[in-house]
Length: 431
Ligand SMILES: [Zn+2]
Image 1 (cartoon, rainbow, N blue to C red):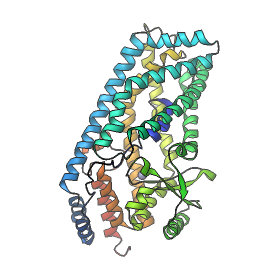
Image 2 (cartoon, rainbow, N blue to C red; image 1 turned 90 degrees about the vertical axis):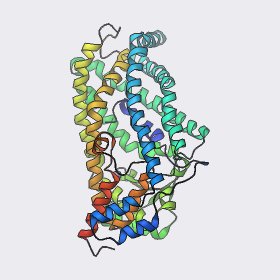
Image 3 (spheres, rainbow, N blue to C red; image 1 turned 120 degrees about the vertical axis):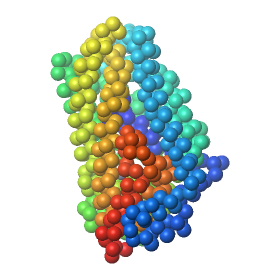
Image 4 (cartoon, rainbow, N blue to C red; image 1 turned 60 degrees about the vertical axis):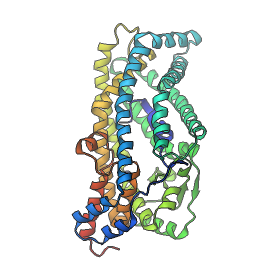
């Protein structure tokens, strides 16, 4: 669930989570051996072909990815424990949070402006404390494994831009939320739920068109032959797009990717420049077939619906836990902005143990459905399997079931290749 830090997570995710790819100075290790992949493509038995594809990833690449992934899992746990302790010990127990609220009250009589002032000081302080961990994860760790193309200066500029957007949109979102909670009193959780869902829906529509250009440039794709094939596939599957855009993801990363989203006039088919540079035309089609699957199957909206259900349960948990934890902290009630660190802490707990596993599980199901859609739409099971092998640059292709359950928001590479090979066996005359 992306709700832990309210409506901001999606925006921050744009700037931070999209961090990976290849740094200068780090020797590149091939994603896979193409001779072995060619051999895998000749096998007709799905099981044998899947094993052959997985075996095409060199041992040093596999070991490297395993190390990289282990760092990420450890980070998740450390970050959760650190943030919980930080909010409890530093912001709540010492009275720092009530201090910031009292300061905001001394500056202005307007409740809304008090909320905005509180948020700006609190978010900046929180970021100062969290910066070393965040820097390690989004910069150092990515750089160590050759997954980040940016220098520290470029990375830090993007970080500051993301921060600026988070401060601004966070202030607006919280002003609205606290005004609503204030008015609703007893049924505050229901009002907060409705408002948060509306804000999330707005961010979903606004982010790809208005926020993504803060970080990346979008230009119509140059390759006219590929453009024609992509638009023909779009028409055939009811995707109402008239143009294909290329995004300069390479300014941050070497990762391969694409997306198809938006509503009405904000509808976009976007492919990363990395994908165009590193992948065959057939693989580009395969990737976009998958992305069109997300669009046609309305995954943004079903995802939002599931998030809504989880959020509602989370808010009821928050109501229960807040009433028990708040006394003695100087917080005047749920409507008091000084309680924001407690709200984030309790949401963080709920999210770590309940929200995130549910969110990952449903996302994995959506990804599987998009894979199946993409195979039917593009019909290139071998090309897409090579794409799955490329994901082995930053994702363990064959994780243990427990790791896959807890941390993966996509099916494992093994599962995805197996699906492509099963599809191929069932469609012997596909191109
Ligand atoms: Zn997907």
